[in-house]
Length: 358
Image 1 (cartoon, rainbow, N blue to C red):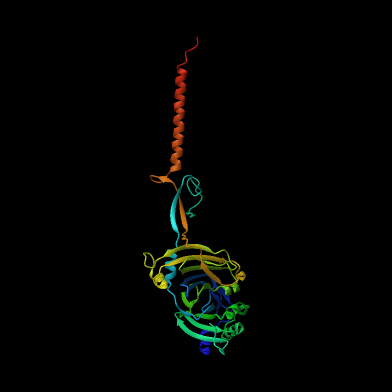
Image 2: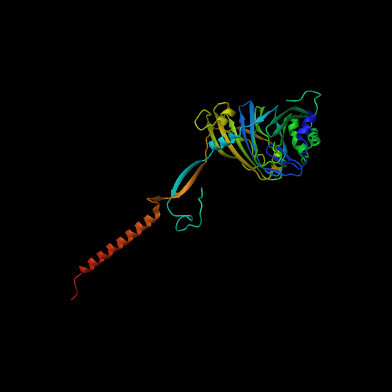
């Protein structure tokens, strides 16, 4: 099995990059960057599922990454429609509001075009073990155990990985907690195809009595990281801390019923048709080296719903687009002129009634 896995994961010998889930290693002298990581997390209190998708750039034809998980994991391809459906469910509400006075994009102040919208291994087990291997589309997946971070690092290195300095240090907390590992080799069936854009999602399932999202290995990233999480649970969820990144921002919170109109099959499949509370979270990590550990999420004090509102400001008009402010000014000018004429006539009449002096 080790020989088979060595063939599967071999020839990955360039410097590593990191993403929010683990170390990302391209092949040869190629380069690969993970600027955006999007994941869907489903947790029912006992089992956690992570469906992740990477947006990558670079010129690598092959790459691999490693992800720690707190228990024995199963891995399968995810449904790419899941991210489309969740983006639709969490989109902002668009409203229109009117303003009276013209702005710089309106006549007569127009300055340009465009709209503005505001478990422990048995005794005697090897220090690195291979639990299983699957071929999933363009992915070769190996599931590993380890009782020694240096041994895990050495095994990966011996199988062709040139891993970043400090990886064993970052893996030690996982080894101490007896976590396991998912190692994935991304090798498109088309040999001329580079790894770019949105990769096919992977769905990882494991038992967990707490909702945790592995982030520690992102400390090894050399560039700023962006994380988007869709969390499907019984209640609205929040990270216990920022773990060294920017303040997590909730972009949507609300209860959804997979049987309701507008909820698509991909979401219903992940939730097994059960109503859940959906929380969408965005977070930036401008300095990945400051990441302190993994994200652990907890229920908030109240299931307060939230949906952002995007306003489109429009100049108040009537009829065929005539600005109300212009009509108001014209009307005011006419009223002032009319008042002036009336005043002048009254003055002339008053002067006409005065008797001539002898």
